[in-house]
Length: 311
Length: 311
Image 1 (cartoon, rainbow over the protein chains, first blue to last red):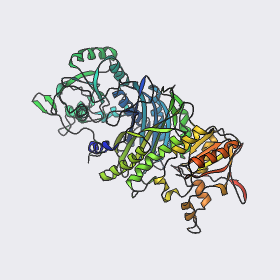
Image 2 (spheres, each protein chain N blue to C red):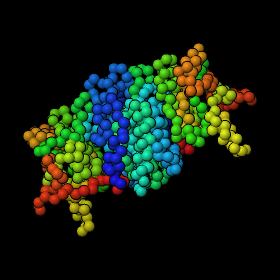
Image 3 (cartoon, chains in turn red, green):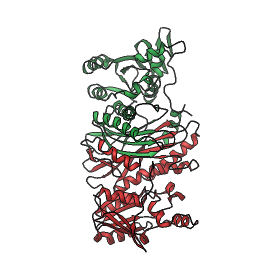
Image 4 (tube, one colour):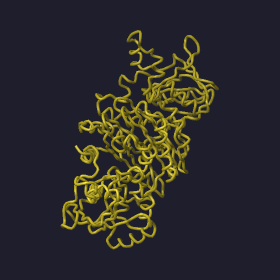
């Protein structure tokens, strides 16, 4: 059973209550805890040694990644982070300096984003380390950007570059908090998601959440990370760069949908506010069905896959 | 390096911000998210297969335990829970029915306590399963009961029974949410903690947080769980029942301190509000130094130990 299948089987059993504005199924949950100005965002995320980072990764980067992944989810809602709690699982005999390095990296990133770290649990885990981060954040009441608001005809936009994250980006990316907050406050963003599973997979999540719409993505418009291009040149068995950009995962960029008439204003405003962060219109939302890639040969189904745990 | 030593080395580096009322170091963090009536409680906790539960434990009980541990921390602050997010880590090939059983147990307990489950992530973990739960809760502004308010002369009280939790209690306990909320609203509780590491260890945490006070515990006043008494009769090498009550851990009962003049009123009120939940005065806070056990032979140091991860 694949991860998303399991989650969709579990979703109907999750209890709700009157505090819930939006439950499981988006980048963060949205809660109404009584603040007259803001809703609360709530998210948890974990990284596992051997799955999300290798044993020889710098511990500071491991700590950074653990927090930055959750920050990226808060960004995708158009919110800002407030406080994090951490559980660090260590195998018996793991060097204490490693754990301190993880916390140093995590706390440095937290401080840079004015996030308080208000809890640090430690547990034993046989064989390898893992790190779980829960985050609360804030967003103006009723202003959280969901995955579910895309409309047929919307322009699809992507920040930054895609593919080849494994070469280093996945340990050092900065969450797009400023860009997303700017978007949410300056423009009518219909839907947004952060790219953790790969564009092909996450676009499907956004389309499914938006009532089963379709999409058309232009291969030549994809912003391909140089690392993905370099990997593609490594021989006849190498993954083509466009496929890498669609399926590698862990890009932690923003994918969002705006009305077609707003697309130029969004791109112009973005480029003036964030001259160092690429922004691209990569295609459009359609009435569907299906997600398609348009390249020199015409239309073909967008590849399946993407970064899936449990597969 | 032991768990608490690691945590105390990490604590000074944790960043704070203006939302933080109380950071790491208590049962929950306390945040001010703008609700004029309430502060927000924030906590994360995790259980690991082979450490906190065995592979043959009923999955429903595993899910219950994962949530109930965090609920017990909210209880220890005098608060009530609001919403939880969950990360379930599964080894490749784990039966999907097991994961569903874990969620069934967790969601049943959540529903019983009106807790919304607003996120369910799944990750791969080599070799065994683990489960991380983050929880937000609420407590009246300024009314969170901390570990740090005990005073010399206070009466020390414990709910329920202690020791022998491994025989089953650790998988089936109910968090003392109702009792703790009643305490916090009806009485001036100086300090409170939930008993996860064993009375001897957690009493020391409470005393350390309260400025390095001491304590005297009466051996014959300890409420000993029948399972601990049964284990103590299992032969010459069996753990004495009093030692089990002090060090077994995972009791998830409340330990709290009240002014000596309030002790009788607290016990009378408790017994009438919760006739099925034992309440005991087990000793008193002293100016210190040290935590002591008084038994038939006189005073001796309270045993060290308690339930420690990473030891």
